[in-house]
Length: 168
Image (cartoon, rainbow, N blue to C red; front, side, top):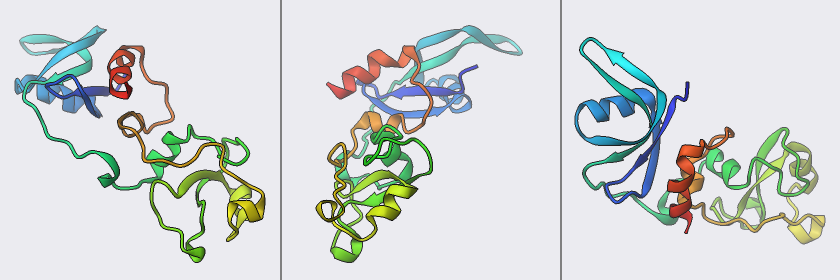
């Protein structure tokens, strides 16, 4: 049974992923409506509702955008596809400052990439050209989808249409 539910703003813009329990509370309080549901029903003493996969809030909620969102390991890993940006490995992942902090680099979205522990150790406090190690993709601020899907699990098919419109 799917435990995560995609939450859309009143404007159909994806804004969050919440637990199934939280989604049901929003539905029961008439703060959201179901857009996509599974085959199973959730039953209680006098009513039954389909298990939600995608819900839409009935009132618009203002959400912060861009670089103002706090840098987190989970989102950097999701942004980089859970792969080392130097060798492509998916094991022993850490974060690496492209320009090391000891050389004036900052801890910001455009200076932090996913790195496996061996590559991170090999690069050390060197600049990318000194270590002959450049990231496969240039680091960037994450998209809204990166924040929403900051989990190594597959994105459900029922979410695809809503997330595609957020990227466009």
